[in-house]
Amino acid sequence: MNLDGIKGVIFDLDGTLVESQLNFSAIREQIGCSKSEDILEFVDKLPDHEKAHANAVILQHEIADAENAKWLDIGKQMVQQAQANNLPMAIVTRNCTQATNIKIHNNQIPIDLVLTREDAPAKPDPTALLQIAEQWQLQPEECLYVGDYIYDQQAAVNAGMRWLLV
Image (cartoon, rainbow, N blue to C red; front, side, top):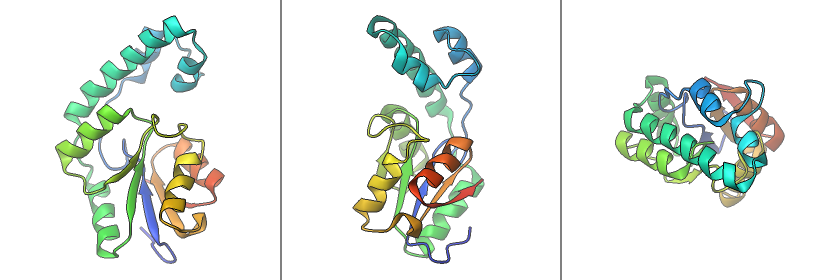
């Protein structure tokens, strides 16, 4: 991980720091979401009486996944590298807070600043990344966002941050 000129590192969680076995096909099937539509955007458009059920299904899958998530070796190495360089670290994830907290606690991930989809609009919206840069009093271009999916790249580009695909 190239940290030249970087003053803060923000990580995605699933597929970046920890493994994830979320079955998106099963989630989509259970809530009636097409393969071409983003699950969270689909749920946001549902009427309230359907939204509660869809969110319950998603939560059930996320909690089951969280209970079994383990550190990825590359994730642990990147966190250790950021620590060795005394850089502030944060996590921005599309997960719910409850599942995120389980993953962080069970794996003893040493990152306290965490924003979930309940704290800011979900990626690829750059709001969470920009909030962290502001909290750190850094310019976006001084931050590195590390992720594993197209939404991570899009969020970083939208925020004006450097990004790394893992």
